[in-house]
Image (cartoon, rainbow, N blue to C red; front, side, top):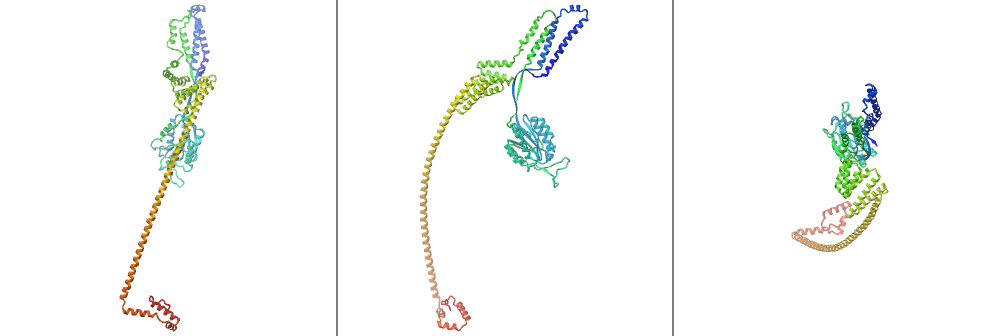
Length: 640
């Protein structure tokens, strides 16, 4: 017995006070009656009243009060265990808290706007765990993964520009921090919402994104700010300057964020300066992600039994109202009897409509009216969706209608909800029957592999049934039958595989032979073609050589003829020139030539005599003069 509101039971401690109250009432009544006169005379006047009936009526009221207290305490007997699971994704929100987030290109400024939008996103989450990371020059986990959205929103409110002591924009460090945090506690789909406005060339964000992708982390990057740049307004109203005194502009590196998202399979969104931060798109993406179980509990639901205490209260109160305190007997008037019977006539009973519907469904099932039985069971299931008996009965109907897959699902739910090992065994037994029937269907369609898998499932289900209820022989019989058929199908499958392998080998051999024949034919054709080509080449070479020889011979003949012609023409020219010279020379010229020729014909004695008279210098001068004078004439080649 279990009570829903146990505090009401403390009212039972007030029952003694009620009894004392009635005792005081009886004594007070006697005291007041005694003031009317002598007690003997008063007793004669009130002799028609019955103290016993008055005590009975008081006792009935006390009993009604006690039963009413029990009814209000919600007594519960019997229970149903209902598994409650929560599914969702795990996500971290990494928010940039550097000084550049103070820029006012997004009103009131980037950080305040981002925090407000992120709180709205957290408020819309349902069943998803969320964590918060703040980063600037380094990164810190401000809130670990939690389902307490109120806590996450409160922590988000506390994040400010000084949340991280080191200034900068360490995007790579934020990604690594989130990756390590997921490694410790992630259960479902992993997601990182990266919200930043700056550049990072120091912490290798692309390398960190590659590591995150290997860990199964998706990054959705939200870029805040403009790519042209925006000056950073400080708290004192001035603008941030660098060491050289120049105003610092915070520029959005959207290309870097796109590369980070692309590496991890996420998306990049640029914040709208005049509207929202496009978090609706991210929320829509979260809804499309595969959700896995983040929390699974089994809640025990107890059945209320207050009516068993409330009904006697009503009956006792009716009886108390009908009992008079006169000494005329205990007979009740007919009207009282009618009032007591009315609740039974109008159906005030302990049985409910659920049991009535279930009985009708059972009757239809016995009459083989399976469609009607299924409809009645589903109507009953609306009132009690976690009733294992209803799941079991629906599975039985589906099994009769050969809807085996649906029947297996119902039996599995029944096995999960049942507490009695025998009933759990029955569920597994029916699962085995359904799987065996599915195997028979697969065999009829010649799908042996699928049939073998179904039989393996049937054997496993029957083994579970045997463990839960060892005294039942039916699961053992079905197990042996499934195992027998399983072995037969294995042998048949092996035989088929052998035949298929033999056919494949024969086909391969035939194909190989065909290929060899084709190769031989192709080889012969190639040889013939090569021989033909060689012959053609030889013929062409011979023809070319003949043509060359003919060309060479013709060219030689032409040369010889030309040379002969040239010699002939040259000879003719020389003869003509000589003839002309002979015609042109006069007798005087011819005489002078003869005299000049005679100059070189001096006798050796005269020459030596002449030379002996000359000095050596004069001899040389004479020699040179003679050479110059008679150069080109006949006889001048002699050594004067």
